[in-house]
Image (cartoon, rainbow, N blue to C red; front, side, top):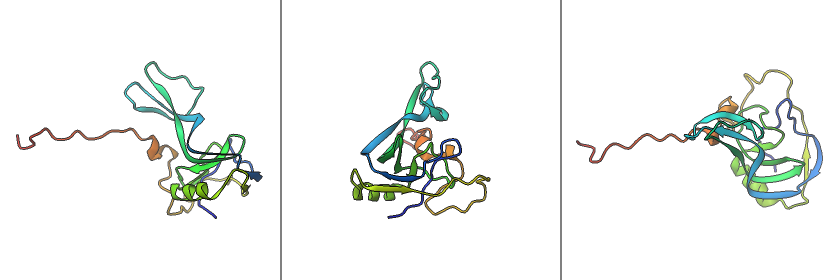
Length: 158
């Protein structure tokens, strides 16, 4: 099987080579990366590390990594946001429908080959697949504030 992906960004490259699936977890969350929210639940650091200081009343929320298939150390394949350029901390993100298909098709011990390299130049203007949205890794909808407009007062005709 093949899928469009977003892999490790500069400084957090995805290691190439031959590996095997060593763990599968349907609803995995990162122990190292996520976001920091204030007491009101508003995101104040969208690309946070677990060791960053958190303001009083705030909290660190680990990044979701659904359909996680670990293949090398902390790196794995999982459902995630594809901004159109390498943006992960080493994992291989793929659209959810592909992650589900892979997750359901592989077992612990299934071979995985990682190849290719992160471009050294600018990511701007690169062609994006239909599975990729936006060009801003901070625009990941999973990390968006959860604001809902207030419903109109009832009865609405008053």
